[in-house]
Length: 147
Image (cartoon, rainbow, N blue to C red; front, side):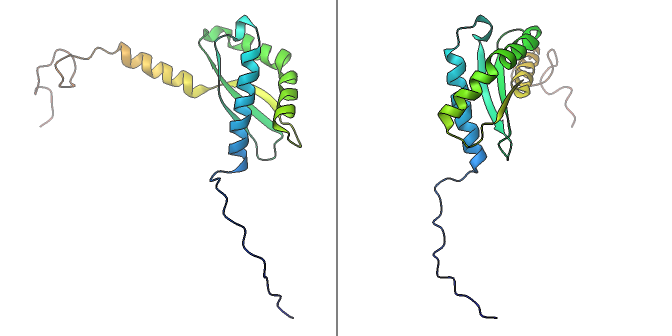
């Protein structure tokens, strides 16, 4: 069996150092944020798009959102986004991103934002003595430490 000589040059290295889905996530986040910014709806005034995750086969995209509104309004906001704005948003993605296949968009609240806010609240509620020793309030410096 004769070996064929491969005279093709290797592909030049790309300047992009991240996969296609990461670039697409960033692009879709910009498109979704700009679209939601143009909407004149009181319930969506304090809404922030924190990220977008598109699956590898481009069938589905989860838009991660955060809001300053009370958590009791989460279900209303998700329902509003899913029922009223999902289809027009997908049409906007199709126009702007020029993809062969437009992913089906769903919305979810970003758990990292809320977890961070809870941690910040807990830390701010702790009473720390102002003497700088980092020990519990009321303990003299040096006491209570394990030798």
